[in-house]
Length: 300
Image (cartoon, rainbow, N blue to C red; front, side, top):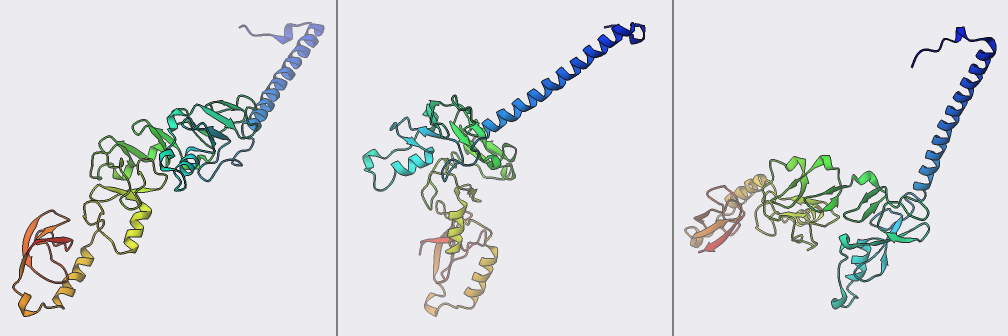
């Protein structure tokens, strides 16, 4: 477009041009203000009731209709707790298949509808975080939710902080990327202490040096009761070298009666897996290979 030379216009033409330019400027400003007000209004509708609805498990603005029993619950965990209660007939106990949820009910207007993030009636956002695959709604985005394609479910903690191990079949912290021992389907079993299925657990899970997995809180409870061996394979769950030094001192200070001084036994070490023949002692038997006292007697 060529330049407009105002100095060549007649006085009346200049006044007309100036007036049109002014109207155009007001129109643009009004249009901008209109867009801003619409954005504010839309945002207010979407955020209405934010963090005010939900249950013990999630902050969300919808409830779900369970496809298995056609009943309405705040979330699948609420369903599972109710339907697996000890007072429920064992024949009727069941879990909700999360991926099969088809209908949700808006908590603000009560409209039942197909699974989607915004209510089709009142327009409210039913969950700041929304996963169409898992049918998951959650307003509390501080959890840093993300969907893992390998696991097939949503997890928390931030995608940038985790990696999916395809042999173990689950997500681990990046800190374990090159150091964790791989065990086929490591998370696809129950916690060896509380027996909750670990793969879908809402509680923190830790990986033991042997590669087995357990709830972090259950591991702490074990340590509080002076249990330091994996419940599945009996390997030590932490560095026990300082404890073994105390065993050395205890054994040195506790000589066996003469009748037992030459008694030999075969032992198997739970830590290194080696067998050896050692002198019997009532306190413990020490592995000749790794110097661990986490052993068991196999033959006298």
